[in-house]
Image (tube, rainbow, N blue to C red; front, side):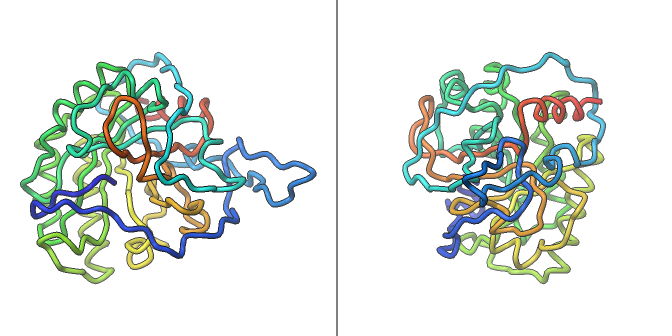
Length: 297
């Protein structure tokens, strides 16, 4: 995710040096096809996770017109060779942004391959990203599918944080599911590291409240260390958005189904200054359209 503002301190997620070798072991999207000369290319063992997530009703029906899919033309300041499991093979790409990206030319960003965007909305129980409302409006005007995320603060109650998110993020037909961003944030004013049991309890309270209000099951965004400490084997019925910038998610999160993959924190694109997070949807164009349709049925 982009930097968090908890305690008025900008924080950047650090990636483990151990995410090096890439040998995909988990099920891959249909874009990964085996060849007779390359036996290590993963063979799809099941449908992409987008088709397996439970469909939850939206508040009101969204238009069923299919959006245009823009091909990926992003660059990367720190390119990684993902081998046969390159995210470039995935059909639908997007970005996530916060105040740190400043003024964005959404039409140019979309033309570079941003088909969806997650916008930093809130963190804790009293901070609103100052660019959220403008980004929310402009992304929609440009035709991007967009959703909002909340950076979870471990020193506030889950109920307070859910209420703050609900207060600031519109309940709108066609919006992507809300996201809870859960990470260890050692540079914030909150130094607490709760027990696994307490972490899961707080997350459940927050997610239940958002699901009741928005009519969609929240997506869980997380990083490798937090996942290892708290989420491995948990929340099987929730969609996951996984940060994995040096190896395929199947290596870093073995056995975990995922909906979105954040594969770079150093992307470069026309339409935005500086670096930007790059993400991909787990599925084909057709599966993307089907997943969007399931959000509004």
